[in-house]
Length: 164
Image (cartoon, rainbow, N blue to C red; front, top):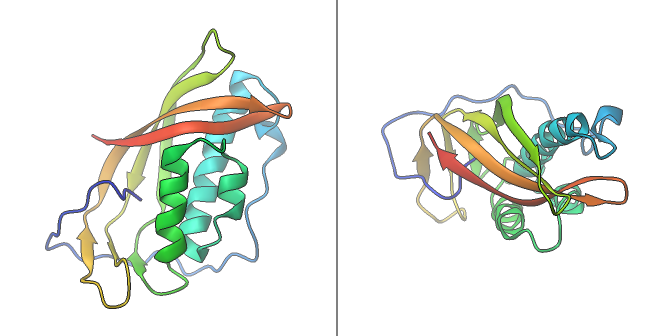
């Protein structure tokens, strides 16, 4: 979900499949460790945390997999804690889907940088029940990110979405 853009449009949001998570996603075993392969799997796992937070408003798992200084992580968490599917302020096909992780590289600092290609369907969001709804059209993005090692695995150091 892109909270950085979102001019009103005439598109209508289609609802996502109605599945209520029984709890936060569990980090898969292949997302543990400090290899580039683990980094790619972590990015995919982190995407499930973004979707879980948007659905439930529970941002603890997302922030737990993020560096404390990740400003865009905190900004996203703040937004979905206020407006989420569970409280009726997000409706439609809001789930982010990673289609590819075409770029991963290890920097001199020990961090991993890269990008993931992301699609998001059309959805409607409101900042509060009294706020005007914003229709967000389906779009494709590139998530640029940096990962940092922590306790033998990757965490999100910083991220941003760039509309394609």
